[in-house]
Structures are given as structure tokens and as C-alpha cells.
Image (cartoon, one colour):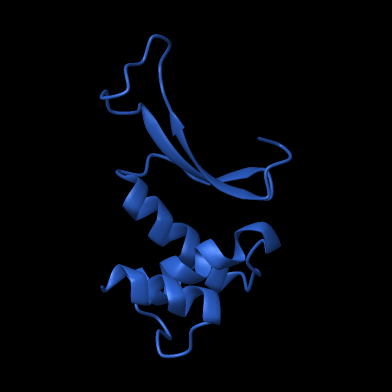
Length: 95
């Protein structure tokens, strides 16, 4: 996790089954666990976006389109200005 720029981690006990709840959900930024004991991945995602906005962090180049979809399509933040890739995906989702 030290080299993780940002991410959401499910912490599970050994022998964890896929349908078991994780022991903990954590938000990592620049290798540091910034938030622990989050109640769901959805809440962790919202918290990650809030931290990125508050700390004025840029989206990772590799995940830029994914973050744009979450921000503009699912969260509907600045949803009127979409990149061509995201607009095409949104149109397909609405078909």
C-alpha cells in the first residue's frame, strides 16, 4: 500500500468468502490510510472524491475517464460538460 497513489481497499479476514462483509473499508491517498472504518464502498468512493476535491488532487491519468464517469454521470457534478468518450458511454447507458 505504500506505493498506492489512491485507492479503496476492502480488508478481509483469512478464509473470507465472496459474500461475506469485509472487516474494514479504507481510503488510501499517496500510500497513507486517510480514512478507515468506512461503512460501504459507495461511501468510500464519495469520501475519496471529497478528499480529492478538498486537497485539489488531479485524477490519475490511467483512471481519468473512470473518475469522470463517476463524477459527471453518477454523481451528476458538472454533468453538462462531458468528454466525447464519456458522452458516448452515457448515451449507450440511456438507450
